[in-house]
Image (spheres, rainbow, N blue to C red):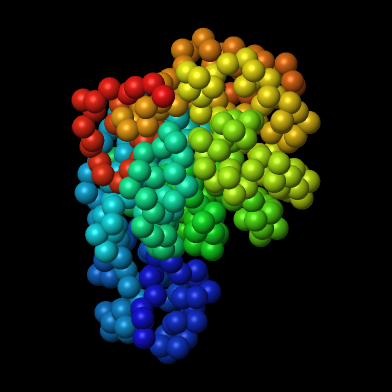
Length: 360
């Protein structure tokens, strides 16, 4: 019988396993707390569970912590972690800290959901090596657990407050694992991260957007839109060839009607797309929608040949969108100098930056 990943189990699943092994049900609660709240990496750390019972549990459960291969810290304090998986695959996760005067400080973890990516967005490093496999629930949750453990070493009171599924891969192509990961991270006896403090980002998987509205209307949704023109989005986000803007926006409007929640539309701007015509087209597309638009300059990836717009161009773009009565923000740039920003993750750690970024 194949063992289950301990980090991928809910308390109800652990209770059933304990019952099958003839153990008391409260052992399931202890197990879950040790793994999901304290982030233990070995069975021996579970000191309130007798050794004989731990041995029984090990016959059905595997504890597989991620292997930290590299940690990098950016000038702005952003941290990037390169993790090794059991089969040799590598993934990257990012920790972003935000100090706030009027609300509690945030510690946001950006997690990966796949090794590689099949979407192949034109500005993104992740898809350059193609898609290799989906991550398991334990591997997704494990990124949060490992980072939580690492930051608590420096500050015992430090806690992961927010999770964004915006790392390597398309989360909605690994739908079931992502939904279960949300459920585990939300548990009060685990990380206790509020469902509204977690966000899934998608390049536009239309059927799953509709399904998510029914399965989990509390989690945040971000859509990597990038352009309001099909001919441009076909290049920037090739998934648009399968789910063009008309289909995508119909699904997004249905999502808003069902959940009563606004979607964040992510728009990475290049020197060529940060123009007035593109801004007006986007304003017309999203006018009247439950929407917030997050603008960002496309980040440097040596192979993509994308050129960033001048900062003033992004501000002009934002003003045009605001004239359509849309909520707009310009994303604070974080972690660019260590390739930890949007579109820069590739699961390789440090990369050679000697080659220049060229134009189209």
